[in-house]
Length: 96
Image 1 (cartoon, rainbow, N blue to C red):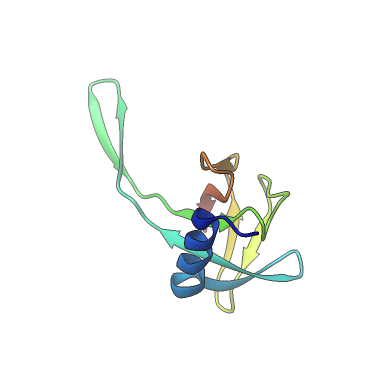
Image 2: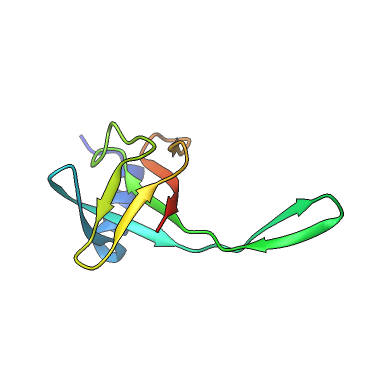
C-alpha cells in the first residue's frame, strides 16, 4: 500500500523530474540551484551551489562519488547524501 505522502512525492517527480541514468537504471531527479551565503570571518560570500534530489526508492545506495548522467550532462555527487524526515528523498550537493 502506498502512503499518501509517498504518492505525493511520486507525483512531484513524475511531473517535474528529469530523466537520468544511475548505475544502468533510468531514474528521475530534481535539480535546483539555491542561493547559499556563507560567512568567512567578517565577510559574507555568495556561493554558487547545485543540489540534486532523487527518490530513495530509485537510488537506495546513493554515495559520495556516484555519477548521474543525462543525455547532455554528467553530475558527480560531492556531499554525503541526506534523507528527508520521511526517508523518501535524498538531497546531495553536486560537482558539475
